[in-house]
Length: 153
Image 1 (cartoon, helix red, strand yellow):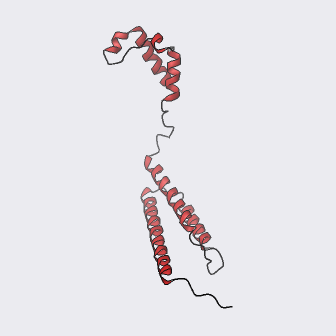
Image 2: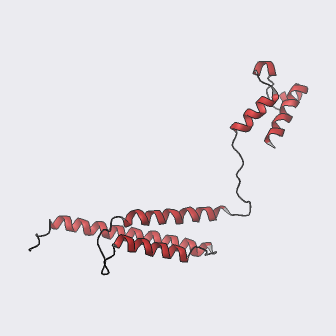
Image 3: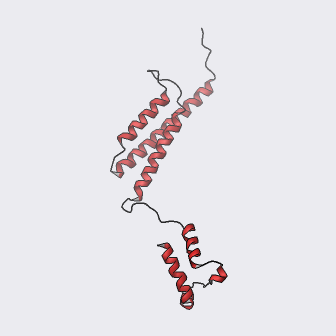
């Protein structure tokens, strides 16, 4: 489609240069350009941005919430690496957090209501933020207290 438009403009410029100059299009001959009309059309086709291949019936909001959800999941994954101690069952707390996050995301995977999706994302971000703040505050307190006393054997 782009190629046919470009070829159409080039052929108009070749056949009716005065008509296009009235609209502000500058005429350049093939000799001045050093390329044929087909070569110019190929150059335009290769270098101009292609139209998006998205389905027109998808609202852009879905892509935004999808990106936000993926971003939140990755943030949970990154911050969970800080939790290196074991829970009461002997599992790494990092793995418990990751498993729980995966289950929550899978449970909401096919949620059609954008309002509910946004609420889940906002709640998840808030939870991550509060957890990291509490983690940082606890780490700061532990650092201020100094190293723990050595264990007796």
